[in-house]
Length: 485
Image 1 (spheres, rainbow, N blue to C red):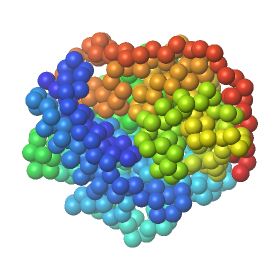
Image 2: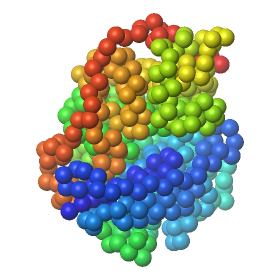
Image 3: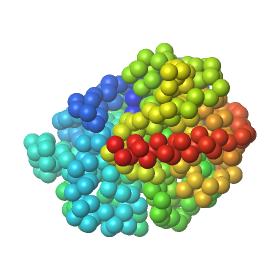
């Protein structure tokens, strides 16, 4: 038996066919367009996401000789998607998690004194990152579309619920607790949509999806809609919680970092709702069919891999993202250059949406290699910032995954900065793997988490070397400047 895992990310959709022994037998990938209609605005056309899903899945299925027995889904979180319940067509583009247009909405609610209560109920904070403020903005700025929401003709959800609607030809309007807990509308204690939050943000509760467990029988694909396949949808989770599951971080205190467009550090806190006073978020990791929930603390860093993409696309300093390692190795250090990649503000632990990117320490001798190396160092510094407040400065081991984890120089920087080993698995696409694991548990491909642990294989362990604390102090000083701009 095998599992088809769909990973609908921020820039493209990956589809994997995962075998019973946890190996990838085939893969498909399709990018989709990014839209930036105004500075700080980021949008996706939902239809583009759906077509990329069909294309990626078709490619993965063509490359596999083992027909899948079930489907798992993982997705970019917080992105607000609207679609017509009957036709499934989106009346407007989705507002992406990176979008900062709702900073004014957040400030208005904060000034009115709502943030303490919102944080108490949700474990989050008032920030444009989260879904509810995007919906408030839509209600205020796109009344024609919002009228459809209020009438019940237009559904509201995140990318997971949109894809499930498309996969089932509209039969299911559901989400899971890991995605729901990122909306500012979900109560950590109640485990459900909170009426007081729906009222605060102006979101009709009847437009929201039903919240279902992360694995089990969640729906079934419609063959007319999805490549002729009728398969159970048996697992779903937001991308970072899926990566935590895919890294088999099943024990309290296990920590992983996914290095993608942004970087996301999560630690398993078990059945306890742990609150942070240091800029971390409390979130649901996953929920069992029994209703038992596993929680996590999360540090969300908005721009890490995206900074490398900016070197490539914005400045033309490198031809490909993997080239960053070779270029950075041509110099022994960054030459005093510090780059704070606050290209969309700063996330954890600073939470400053007004911060702007900053490069300091430039001299006549600065070369592109110094800036490239400073970019890799910045990623390691950002993760150190989060790990130190999350763990009190000590972590036994950090499990690393995501595209940038393939960069050996970055992983060594990270181990040095943490003073702790960094372990990279053979399968670095642990977001999709987590979706496969959840779906396989839900459909009986695997019978227990112990079976899943046996499939995890180490690719390389990076042992910590000498830590450059002066460079880190220069970083901290530069962050203060970036926040002051």
